[in-house]
Length: 59
Image (tube, rainbow, N blue to C red; front, side):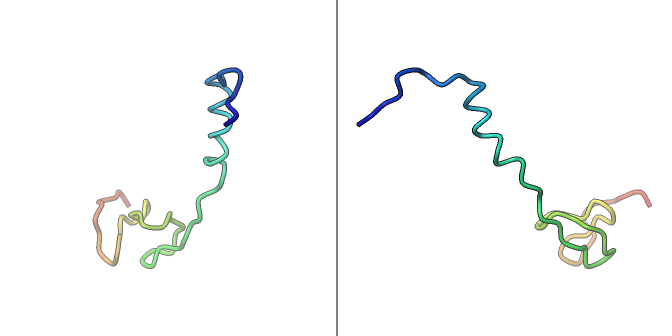
């Protein structure tokens, strides 16, 4: 089975792994306030998750 002749540097390894982070997260509107928020996360604007307030926010 073929193996690499030389060890890949940490820089090259990290460059390869960096592509996963470039994709923009899909945002969905919050059902309470309508602001964009990441799915499966509490809303950063109103603090609501699954119909109830779980994080206190300053408004």
